[in-house]
Image 1: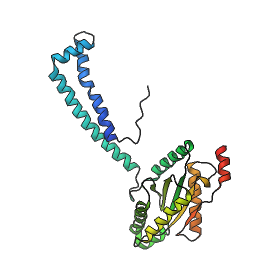
Image 2 (image 1 turned 180 degrees about the vertical axis):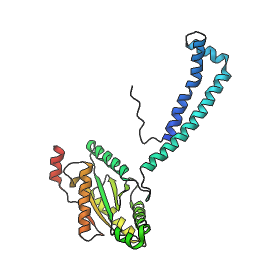
Image 3 (image 1 turned 60 degrees about the vertical axis):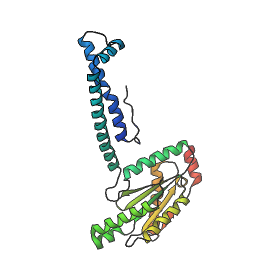
Image 4 (image 1 turned 90 degrees about the horizontal axis):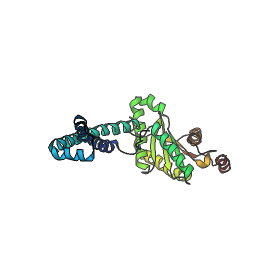
Length: 256
């Protein structure tokens, strides 16, 4: 028998206490079965009910005590597991999601769009001249630049969006139910937010949606946004460039 899979979205601090409560029922039941074995009787409902009526205090104490212990233990273990899960998906410097979490969410979004109509956009951001910032002010200045970009993303992204630090000086934003042209509005808000933050760096941004790729795959979407980002950097940095649409090629790839 396969072990039932608990959905990742369910908080363990709530799931484990429920499972603990169910397991706690086994304590008094186990005692009743043991008594049946000692008495060489079958653990029929009649026998079990007779045992409960004969010794309700012991069985009640055993059941209640086990219930309290298992529920409290389950809640504590579940809270620790939730904390570990959240930590594994966060970038320690910026507090944003990390690449692992972003890649998983992007794959989920692409899979969802394979079953339902819709759109998704992907922003890839690069901090301009981070090496020079590090050279002038040390790694503390570089960290401050990265945290400023993270703060700009938090201020401008919608609740449904997923901003993340992709690695090094790169950030990314997953935009569900959004086209590249709509993502352009967010990109400009990000740049405006950074201009309003004293000492914040500028960023180059590339944007792509599924119209820019040959097939609806996470890697293809990332590569399209990365090519747009590369073009923005080559054009002088501190700007936004959209990946060109290729609707005919995308239609052929989807049909294949």
